[in-house]
Image (cartoon, rainbow, N blue to C red; front, side):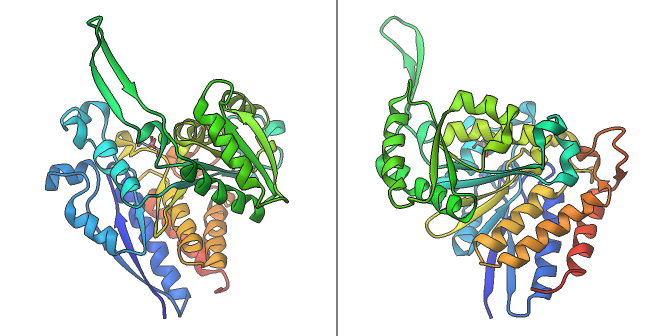
Length: 369
Ligand code: IPM
Ligand code: MG
C-alpha cells in the first residue's frame, strides 16, 4: 500500500487556518482509499519560522521537505510594517520561498484560472464576457529569469546610485517548461498560447525559437503567439480564447495575479510547482494578515492545492476530481466565507472551518474511486 510522505508548511497569516482544512481532506481521502495512506509532517516556514527559529526556511524544515514525496505550503509573509522587523534577506519571500523553488528546481508552475458557472458571480467581468465560465491554465517558468539572475547594486562613474538585474535563460530551461506546457495542451484542447515580448526582449526571441523547436514533438498542438501586454488586455476582454498559456517567470507572476483578478479573487488560485523529483503546492495568494486569526478566510486555494497534489504527485486523478467537485458543490449550494462573497449576492455566510467541514461532507457522500 503506497504511503505518501507529505511535508505541511502552514506558513503565516491565514496559512495555519486554511492548512487545517487541507488536513481534513487528506484524512478523508486516506479513509476513502484503502490502498493509500499519508504521513503528514508539519514544519515551520516563513516569517513565523524566522521569529521562532531564526530562519524563515530552517534546517529542520529543509530536512522534512527533503524526506517528503510532496510539499504543501500555506501563504507566507507579513504586512509591510511587520516585514520591516526582519532583515531584507531573511524576509520570507527572499529567505524561504525563492530558496525552496531553487532547492527543488520547481521549474514549472501550473496556475489554473478556473471559474465554473456556479461561481461566475464572483468575477468582475460581465456575464456575456464570461460565457460558460473561465477555464484556463497558466504555465509559468519558476526558477529562471529576473528572479534568479545576477544582481548588482552600486554607484556608477557619474556618482549615481544604480541597480542591475539580469534576465537570463538557457535553452534547456526554456525547453523543459515548454515540454510541460505542450504535454498539458495535449491533455486539454491542443491549443497553446505562447506569451512573450520578442518585439523588445532578446530573451523572448530565444524563448520563441526554443519553443518552436519543442513544438515539432507535438504536431497536433496549435501554437498561438501573443505579446504579453496584449495578453493582459485579452484576458479581460475575452478570456475564453485561452486554454493553456506558457510564459517566463516575471510575466507569469504578473499575468497570474491578473488571472485571480478576472476570477474575482486570488483566493480562488491554487497552484502546483513541479520539479524533476518532487513538487510543491501552494495558494498563489498572500497571507492576508488583515483577516488572519478570524476564521473567515476561504480554504479553496489550499484544498485546491490538495486536489492538484492528489493528481500530479500521486496519480489519484478521480479522487482529485472528486475533491474539486465537492468544493464547488459547497458554493453551488449557496455557501461562502466573508472574504469570498459580495454583499447582496444572497450568500449563506459560513466560517473557514465550516466551509472545510462542508467540503468533507460532500466528498464523503461521493462514491469511492
Ligand atoms: C507568487 C508570489 C511570489 C512571486 C512572491 C511571494 C515572491 O507573488 O508566487 O506569485 O513573486 O513569485
Ligand atoms: Mg505573484
